[in-house]
Image (cartoon, rainbow, N blue to C red; front, side, top):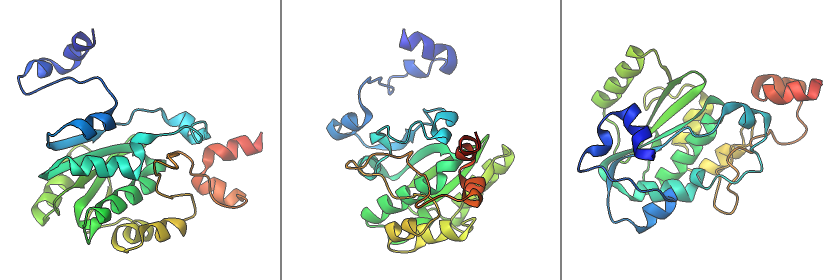
Length: 220
């Protein structure tokens, strides 16, 4: 059974009284529950190769829309966090998504609520309901360094002009629109998270820097 399989990996975690298993659509669960959570996880559930090749570009991804992240934020405790894990190639779009969701939630400076690090071509983005203070940022940074993870974003270090603009400028959509690739924030009306091909006719330079898998296809 599902519980037996989980027990082999997680030990007795599923046997604790506070743990309840619900097998249903995650957004449906968030809509109907009255519970609030300290941690909500959006796991890395797809494989990298199909996404990099564009095979998922026309596949709806309702879990990765602005409405989905807003619903998750609404179900957090005041000190709660969301952890979103995505492939590195998708990170800037994930950052734009989180920044816009935080602004929609009334946050004036999303950069103070975000921290990210990762390895093996994937990155985890922490989205905090409350602003991260200096002690918390230092603790997160120390954890990443201890486990040899690469920092991708921090309130005091954006790791790039684009990431700084996405998290500090008021019009997130305008900043996303100015980027080389398609970083437009997915919505329920356009839930295509993996459609990130650069606008216009791609050049070899563009493909080499941001669409390596498409370069392979173009060369065949």
